[in-house]
Image (cartoon, rainbow, N blue to C red; front, side, top):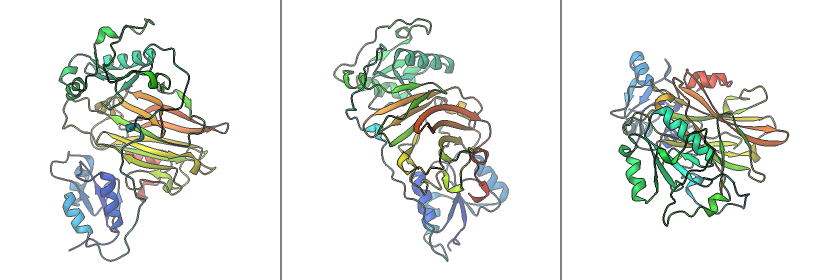
Length: 386
C-alpha cells in the first residue's frame, strides 16, 4: 500500500537524514510537506523518542496516522498516481565560516581585545549576558559554540561541567575566569593570556568583524553581494539530550513589509526562493543559516527578514543565547549575540535592507509569544497554503 500523490505530510522531532533533505525527498515523491498539522494532514513523521510536540498532540487529537522516518520513505516509493512535485535542491554543506582564509586588509582596531573570539561557559543567564556585553566593549567577539575560530574560553560558575570545556582544554585554548573581565564601568584593558602555538592575532586583528548589539546596523561591505547569515544556539538546560526544535526561516519583503507572494517565504518545505535571493543551509543540529545573493534581488524587494520559530512548549528563553555571524566567502564582517529572550516562541533575528541604494544589515532580536504560523501571517504569508 502506498500514499496518494498530494498527501499532506508533517515532520516533527529529530531525524536521521538532515531535515531539509528528508523534506525534499518526500516532496520529490509527490507528497505535500507542510509545516503545521491541520485537519487536512494525512501523515505525521516522527521517529521513536521524539519530544511530545504540539504537532504530535494535534495529530493524536485528529487521529492522523503516525509513522517513523524509514516507513515514510518506504511509503514515498509507492506514491500513486501523479507526477512528483519538485522543490529547490538545498546544498547541505559547512558554512563559509568554517574555512579560515586571509581577508582583505582593513583598518586595525584600537580596542584591546580585538581579534579574540571568546566562548563563555556556565554562570547564570544575567551573569553570562553581562560578560558578553563586556567582551564586546573590549573588542572581542563572544562565541556560543566551540569552532576553530574560538581563541579563548571564559568559565563562570559551573562552566567546567560543560562538555565543551574539556574539548577546549584539549585544544590548548587559554582559560579565562571572571577576574579577567573587569566591571562594565571600567574601561581599562585587563590582561589576557594568549594561546600558545594556536593563534597570533595578526590576521584577525586587522580584520575584526563588527560586533553588533540588538538594533545596531552595519553597511554590507562594498563588493560583497553574496554572504551567509549563520545562526547558532545552545540549550540552557545543561542536558545534551534537550534539543528544542528550532526552524530558521526568511522572508523577502516589499515596501509594505509583506511578501509579494508565498514564494518569498523560505522555510524547510520551500528552502530556496525562486528568484535565488535566499536559500537555507544547515551545519549541525544547533546551527542553521540563510545564504543571500543580493545580485538576484528584484527591485520590488526592499528588505529580507531572517527569523526563527520553536515547535512545542519550548521558548527562546530555553534556547538561551543566539549567536549570529555574517560570513562572506573570505571573511566575517559582522557578529551579534542575542540573549534577552524569555517566553518568545518566534523571533526576528536580523534584517537586510536597502537604504539610499546601499544594503545594510541590522541585528534585531525582537520576539513574539506566538508560533511559526502567526509569525508567517505577520509577514503576509497565507498559511493555509503551506
